[in-house]
Length: 154
Ligand SMILES: [Zn+2]
Ligand SMILES: [Zn+2]
Image 1 (cartoon, rainbow, N blue to C red):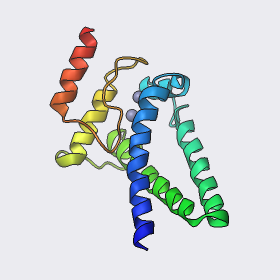
Image 2 (spheres, rainbow, N blue to C red):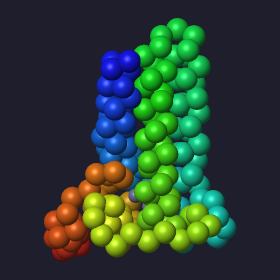
Image 3 (cartoon, protein in one colour):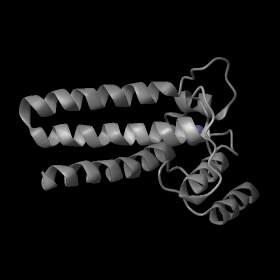
């Protein structure tokens, strides 16, 4: 039991590390073609960038199936991925981009720091020059402001 909880927690943390690197080096790199829609204003509710979420859901579903068939730890890794997906959806699509049909505003604490950080990520509408690529982890707003300034100057 304890071992499985550890696997889930490590998977959630691992996914944030992976998501940060994937966002920075792939989505703002070769994968910009899909991600660009999220940095520019697009018509309608969905954007091409949502295809990333679709793919990650397919991968998580496949891991659940493979895990239950062959190796249970994989099932718990899939559970960690899914919990990460829910947290990501709540913070990124919910709190930051307000894609839900109601309004929740957070004005203080760590969640507010995450919201400010991701808003700063969206200061840039181009492939290069963005700051703050994490979703559940972010630097302090002052640090990001300085980074953004330095990148703009460069
Ligand atoms: Zn981005
Ligand atoms: Zn965003």
